[in-house]
Image (cartoon, rainbow, N blue to C red):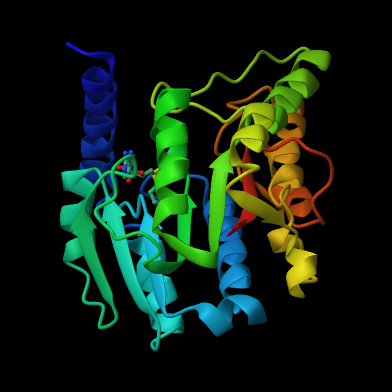
Length: 272
Ligand SMILES: C[S@@+](CC[C@H](N)C(=O)[O-])C[C@H]1O[C@@H](n2cnc3c(N)ncnc32)[C@H](O)[C@@H]1O
């Protein structure tokens, strides 16, 4: 059995369980409700940017899961056409049941997109490319996104990186807490490899350069949340480091993002 077949099976079986457990809920693939809320806020903020609105006719979400985010966006922007694509039949079956006038769904693979070159204005992903379990596959995914985007089009990525994740574990270790492991179905991006690979393909654009003054569009938008929920709170309570969004956690999580302690980051890439 080839490595890529077995990686694909890991992903299909993981999301089969997610589909059965969470159905159409917003908790599907993300049980931490603050992370889901902040990811959504960052995606809305991105779509509200003037430069994005001007070119935003066709939008492709890759790795749309059960379609929750796409449905929210499609109802906010009725004049934009949204298409959601996902690798998991089980999640896609749930997405396809949503009644979205300006939204369609199909099964597909980001490593081999069935879209013409330069055919889409905007692409976004929310924790999808980290499911490609080798750097080679991640490069294929990034190249395909680049191929399909129109020149000047934007790729808004909400994906995980090792730099924030390593800082988080370092902070935990300093205080006597053990490492949080990377889930078996994820591979986080190495920032240096990522930056050198995308350099000829995309420019990284700051949200502020596109007129945003929102913290939601900062790459480290989840840093304060991760620090409070995964370092301070478990330290004080000696409890489960995951999913404890108490009032204590919320207090820090809604402060402006500080430091680089979140694996999940938001980056705006513009096709060169
Ligand atoms: C962490 S989930 C996020 C789903 C959705 N964006 C959300 O926020 O709930 C990652 C999604 O990427 C999809 N995915 C994994 N590998 C993929 C691939 N090669 N091509 C397209 N989608 C893929 C998974 O099936 C899953 O639905």
